[in-house]
Image (cartoon, rainbow, N blue to C red; front, side):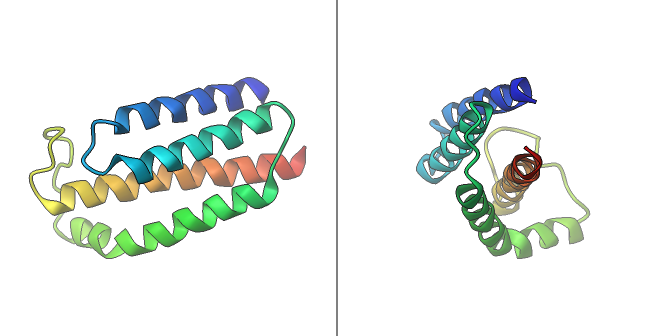
Length: 118
């Protein structure tokens, strides 16, 4: 379990680095570094239940703001969002953001559950 948490910590740091060339990097970099720190601390045996819950709450609220755009994308027949790295239309960027937050939410949910079992 410790190795998985270390790998996830490193992975979220890499996610943060990749965001540096985005148009709006700072919120994403902060989120990914926050998650990386939580995983790193948990790997070291220091689970922070309330920090994990707070991060999860933030992600759920952020996802709620993007949910209408995600639903719109689904209603459009889920056109490709991977055609190019440049988002030519708003649904591409907003859907990618929603799915990125979903990944973070799943990771934080798993971290919370695994922290409770420890």
